[in-house]
Amino acid sequence: MSGAEDEYEDRRISEELLRRERRDRIKVKDADDYKVVEGVLDSRTLMVLYSLMKSGHLASLSGVVKSGKEARVYLGKAASGGDLAVKIYYAVASKFKRRIMYLEGDPRFEGIKRGPHALAELWARREFMNLKQARDAGVRVPAPVAVRGNVLLMEFIGEGGRPAPLLAESEVDRGDYDALLRYIRGLWRDAAIVHADLSEYNVFKWRGELVLFDFGSSVDARHPLALDLLRRDVETVNRFFASRGIDVADAEEVLREVLGRCRPPPGPALAAPSWSGYPGTG
Ligand code: ATP
Ligand code: MN
Image 1: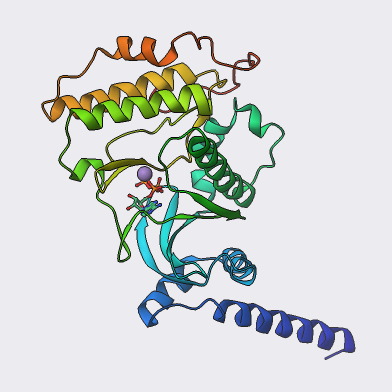
Image 2: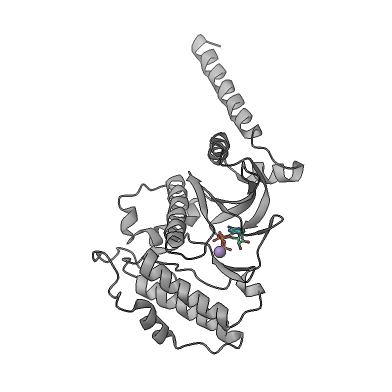
């Protein structure tokens, strides 16, 4: 081997050792969890987790809570000992198209980088911002804790490592319906966003209170399709409560009430987006 090759090999080995060392510092509860963590997380994500541990945001990571379409949610522990939900967005090319559709038209994300990693990171950041805006507007959501790379840390809603029951799994009453409509209005008027994926599967009912989550698809109120998405959210919520025997209000009536005098939505008008086929809007 030539000197240059030796040097290359040395560097490769030391990089590999560094990588393993970092990986191994991600403490996991037991062998099964370890396999889960190792099997699905790429080295880049492991680095991000390591960095969140080093900065004191995350003490440990245990098993998967749930794998979704866009992300996988893990149970984590904060340095303080409390539970955290650790949402890790997949950096997979096949998830691209849907994401780009949601991003274009959102003025907060002009001039974005493309590529699977950049988009997974952007998606995490976007959910973090949406959670923050919602929370600042007084809407009950998991409190956002930190975002780095494709990893989002937030308050864990639930107990003993088990997520709270979904609205879909809970008894509901008129009060829940009214509360959800109030939240929809709060999101529009005070947070200037539309959830855009609202359903009985993205709301927890926890200790008698509703907690909205999964804000990765939420759009700015200035998005050209914001009103359509708002209407779709209201219709989905109405359909669910009607199926539970609750006497729901007319969707257009609800929309008028939500919009109030805040129509057109706040902010400068935007150019129409360059894509078509937005999911669910035809
Ligand atoms: P889906 O494709 O099912 O919509 P997703 O990838 O969009 O999933 P979320 O809906 O945000 O991800 O979360 C998926 C699941 O992870 C939830 O149904 C819930 O069980 C759990 N989860 C998410 N956020 C939290 C949280 N803050 N606290 C507790 N559990 C959570
Ligand atoms: Mn969801």
